[in-house]
Structures are given as C-alpha cells and as structure tokens.
Length: 153
Image (cartoon, rainbow, N blue to C red):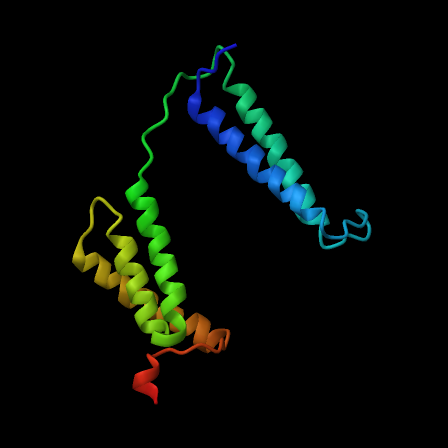
C-alpha cells in the first residue's frame, strides 16, 4: 500500500500523536464517570477523539480516489520568528510593560510575512494596543504593568 496524499497522511499522524499525548497525560488526573466527570475526563475524551480523527484522515490518504499531493517545504524562518515574538512578549511584559511587549511582539511577528508593510504593521500595533488595554486592563482588570517600570517609578 502506498499513500497518495502526503499532506493528509502526515496531518493524521500529527493528530494521532497529539491526541495520544493528551490521552496519556490525562491519566495522571482522576477520570471519573460521564455522570461525574473528573479533571482528566475531558482531556482523555478529546485525546481519544483526536487520535481517531487522525486514524481516519491517515487511512483516507491511501485511497485510490485520494488526490495525489506532496508536502510543501516548511517555512522555518516564519515559525522561528513567530515563536521568538511570543518569547519576547513573555520576557518583556513583567519589566517593560504591556505597551512595549505587545509592540515588540507585533513588530517581530510581522517580519515573518512575505508582504510586510510598515504602515499596516503600525496600524496593527495601535489597534491591538488599544484593544489589549480595553480588554485586559479595563475589562478583566488583570494586574500587569502597562508601561515600563522605569517610567512609572
């Protein structure tokens, strides 16, 4: 048997791996019963369903009616820039505040786009800063610094 649709096959394998990991790690928590669910019940069921979905998707990649596809090259540069932007946000939020952290995160992640435009990026920074302030600081009243520590001291 030879698989025709490589994208579906590897997507199914990914679902099986993630679902299996969820199911495996949820065994550390009490499962309970469907009537009295414990903290591990939902992750266990979600993991099992995800793994079953992965098996179905992978199985369909072997069908003769399946469209023949190849896997596109992985954009490692984009993946690393997005991960770096999230890491920079996490490291800078406590000391530099939300304004600087969100701005850095958006600027770094925007560089990952092929059609990067400064004007659009700056508009995104302003809009997301306003929305972040309204939702997290005013709406949810989360306690984290908005401005850098050296400006508020």
